[in-house]
Structure formats: C-alpha cells, structure tokens
Image (cartoon, rainbow, N blue to C red; front, side, top):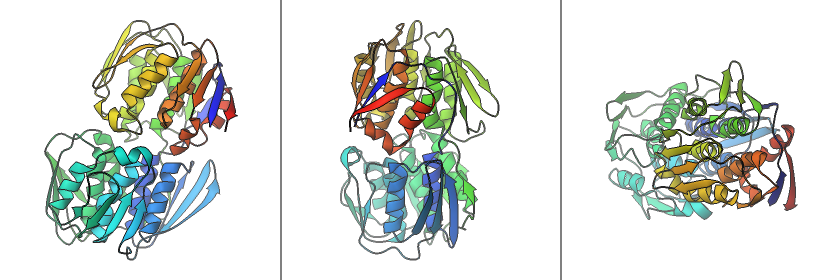
Length: 423
C-alpha cells in the first residue's frame, strides 16, 4: 500500500495507544499462570497478534473481544505444551526472543520460526546460554529447532546485545526445578525493558532478586493469574505524535504516565533540550519553538531515534546522535533507512556506526520515500510531511500494521490529509 500525504500542520489531541511491550509481557505471564487472566488494551497490532498466535500454539487459550480503541484479551494458562509445536513469530523480534527460553522451559522439542527481516536477526548469544543449560538449538538464526529442556543453574550472557534475551530468561527460569542465576558479562542495554519485565513478573507473583551484574531467580515458582489489568500507554509510538508537535505547531497526547518504566519517556527531555515547549500534566502538550541542534546518547531509547532525527533535521545548527548501534538489527537497518528516508525529503543527514550527524535545514522538500518494510520509517515520513514543500509519497506504508494499524486514521483525526494511491 502506498500513501500520498499533503503537507498539513497537525493539531488537536490524540490518545496514546497501549504499549505493545506491556501487552506482550502480560500475555506471556498470563499464559504461564494457573487460572484466567485478562488485559485491556487499545490496538491489535501484527506484533500482538504474533504473540497471541505463538502462545496459542503452546497451549494457552486466548479469547480477544472488542474493536480498535478497546480490546480485552482473556487468557487461560497453558496446561501442557505440545511436543514438536511450530511457533511462528511472524516479524516480531520481541515475541521470538522472549518465547525461545520460555518454550524451552516447557518442552524438549519445538520449532521457532518467523518471516522476512526477522530471519536475519541473530539469536546466537541466547542460544549459546541455553545450550549450556540443556537446550540445543539448530541455528543462531530462525528457524530454530530445539532439543532438550532447560535446566536450572547459572546463565552467563552478554547484556549489550539485546535486553530481550534477559527478559526471556527471567520469564523462563522461575518454571525450572532448581534455583538459577543470570550473570551479565557486559552491562545491560535498554535496561528499562528489563525493568518492565520484572514489574510484570512481580504482578504475577514471581520473585526475582537483582544484584550487581545479574539476577537470582528461585525455581518452582507459580505464576498467579491477574484477573483485570489495563495496559500502559505506549511512549514509543507516542514519540511520533510528540515529534509531530515539534515539527508542526501544537499537539497534545493523552494516556501517558510520567511514572512509566518505559525509557522512551526520555524523549521529552531531549526535545526540551533542543528548544521545544513541553507542558506536562494529565496530558502532554508539545509546541513548536525555535529549535537548535544538540548532541545526545540514545542507547536507552533506540526506537525513538528515527523520530528524534526527523525533528533535529529542522533544528538550527548541528546535531549528533550516538548510542544507536542496535538500530542496524531492527526491522531494517534503521540507521541506513532513516538516512535514506530523510535525504529523500531534502534533509542534510549522514549515518555513523551508531547514529546520525545532522545539519539542520529550514524545511523538507516533497518527495517519495521507501518505508523499507519498517513501521517506524513510515511513521517518521508522515511526521516530516508537515514541513514539506510538496506532497510526500510513502511506498509500502502498510508496514505500520506491525505496531500501529490505526496510525493513518489517527493522522486524519489530527487534520492530516492522506490517501491510498496503490493499495
């Protein structure tokens, strides 16, 4: 699907969609719990559908009712995971990386697979840690077929590759017969996502002890069902609307918690440092102001970096974004695809090994961009269109369905003018 967007300043109030990171984690814990749990959330994205599909294949019963803006998932926990199950994570890295050790704690044989870009994303460090504790993996890349269940003990793993490896182990280890430790051989990146996992585990009655350099997890713990939970608002996807307020004139986002464990709330500090006017209360309002270039390390907020790069392309002076090396192994190489998208719109930006060097321009040109099958690239292009000299065409815009299927509908609610030209 290709989308044409006419340059129009967005304004008004938009409700943040539910955090898919929060929903993923709740669904996984609920599938491991004894009894019935329920979660309320706003958006049934392809990534959430992938987690539902995988957990169902593992033996959970998941019933979803509702419509866009108001869904409820009722989850009955797994009694016994079928041996030899095929688990298809589609294109969702979170689903795949968290599920791999969870499934290995429940079954001695299954195949985890995916599609497209996920087949190119590495799992080697997690597989190595699992192989030392009883589970052999057929490959460091999907599809992975396993042999042998996980056993308790010490799991040594790098922390600077993916926080999802640690989160997956934290879900799995309480299910094992003996006590275990996760020892990080390097400091953890995106530690906020590990904190989200720990918060979910605590909600389901699981105890984890954090120590300097790792985690201690008692075995033979029981996940307790959570009858009613409302998912947190998604700071990651809300970043695009916050960026839209900076690029445009004024925009308000509701449904976000300032005390959220999501590290992406740090985008507020960054856009304020660059000169944006930000007002925080029950809602968050962002207004355009005289923006200036800045430098910052974005290691803890990699998903927000393309949107922040888009904003800083319109700031006066030079900006340098570092700490984003993991962008290269997302749905696309997000350093390369962010640069290609913004250059197509007239930006002065270059990629580095771990980020971007940007020289601000007054406005974007119109043009045609390739979303590169990456939802965040498509949404950035839509945000940038507000300050374009002509229409912006986004090729492959349907990729927003991965995380935010109602994105273009919400764009229209804020006054955006977009239409499908090839669907």
